[in-house]
Each structure stands twice: as structure tokens, then as C-alpha cells.
Image 1 (tube, one colour):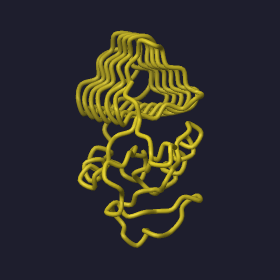
Image 2 (image 1 turned 90 degrees about the vertical axis):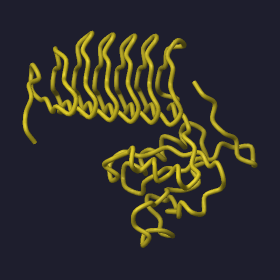
Image 3 (image 1 turned 180 degrees about the vertical axis):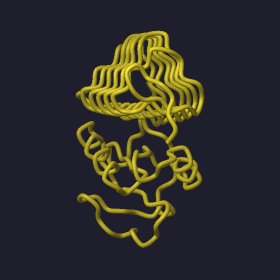
Length: 214
């Protein structure tokens, strides 16, 4: 797991990319993890800069210090990859955020920019890619691989040897059984039980999960 940066004051300083409710929740996790949350970074709406959301100042990305550490919130910015591309142009670097209430196996690896929320469990030899969101209460089994910018939302359960492609979303309470592959940008709907591979860009729902049109 990559170490995070230290600010000049000796505390760890972090910016959260986004200024919606999910950003406020993530800022709370960061504070509980020992970070000093220096602000929420607004990228799309200049009118919000200088305001306060949930007690956190909304700041302009152009004013960030060189090499500022940041994580990208889920929610208002629907495409987290696009949001992070904008953040990188404004000199941000990905921080690794693991909530103290999470359990991460010693053999697991977590890449820069990844977020592991409270009560999440990351199993042995799991690989969590850059800017992956593992939300609260998620169970990640052994030998699971999650590619960059994928999202695993609250209460989801991924069994052993599952593979999740880049930008895919596993919604709340979904279950993915062992040795199943979820393709890039696929969506597993809330409460679904996935027992076979899901191709890229496919949406599935139900028990057992079947494709559906949005």
C-alpha cells in the first residue's frame, strides 16, 4: 500500500474532489482516518467556490498547492475518471484512504487514489486498483481483482477470485459468486446475485442476475 503525503505542519492534508453529499461523507471518513481535510474541490461550477458544504470549504482547484493529495468522491460527478483527469490537470495526486474501521489483509494491495470505507473487509491477495471506491460494509474475498475507477457500493459481497473491470459498478447489496468476471463499465444492480460472467457495458439485475435495458 502506497504511503500518503505529509503536509508542512506534520499532519496529513487531503482535498476531496467533488462538493456534493458523497464528498462530505468521504471527507468525514478521511477525518476519521487521520487526514486534515483542507477542502472540497469544485471543478464544474465556479459559483460554488468559496461556499461551505457540510462544514467544509469549497475551493478552486487552481489554488491547490503543487502535488496536493486528493481523492475523488462518488455521486455528483458521475464519471469519476473524467473528474480525476481534471483534478490531475490541476496538480492533484492520488492518496490512498483506508478507514480505520476497515480490515485489510496484509497480503492485499491497494493502489493510490483508492478508497476503503468503514467496516469493509479486503481479503487475502486482493488487488484494489487506482481510484477504486470500496464503500462501507463491503466484503471483498481472497484473490479478487478490481480495476481502476470501479465502484463497489455499500453492503456488496464479492466472493473469491472475482474480477471487476475498469469503471464497473457493483451496486448496494449485490453478490458476485466466486470466479465470476464483471466487464468494464458493466453495472450490477442493487441486490442482484451474479453467478456467471457479465460482459463489458452490460447491465444486470435480479436473482440470478440477467441483462436488462436502462
